[in-house]
Image 1: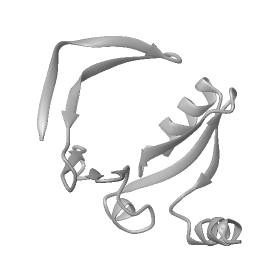
Image 2 (image 1 turned 45 degrees about the horizontal axis):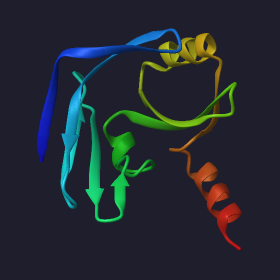
Image 3 (image 1 turned 120 degrees about the horizontal axis):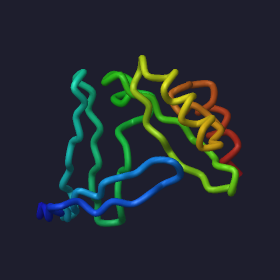
Image 4 (image 1 turned 135 degrees about the vertical axis):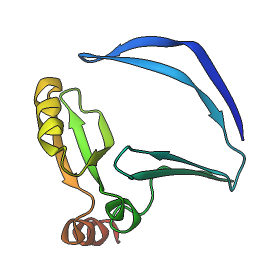
Length: 122
């Protein structure tokens, strides 16, 4: 793993939010980094030879760390996978309203996942 910190961070706007790009992490295949929250949540990103596991299992490890995955869509028909901390859903809903984002599906719901799985099968 190689880490390149940006000091000072590059700042830019994403909707109504100003973000700080703090750097880059260059992972080799079969390497992983873990992001942590003050409440003990963990979010892993792992590199494989074919690309990335962008999230831990959305109906297993992710919820066990107090995090939920949502498939969301903005008003420009761009789709995102957003990770929401349990207990912060009210903040998330306010953010979605302000940014004109709608939740297409919560990806930690077994019924939703089963329906998506059934739709994906030929």
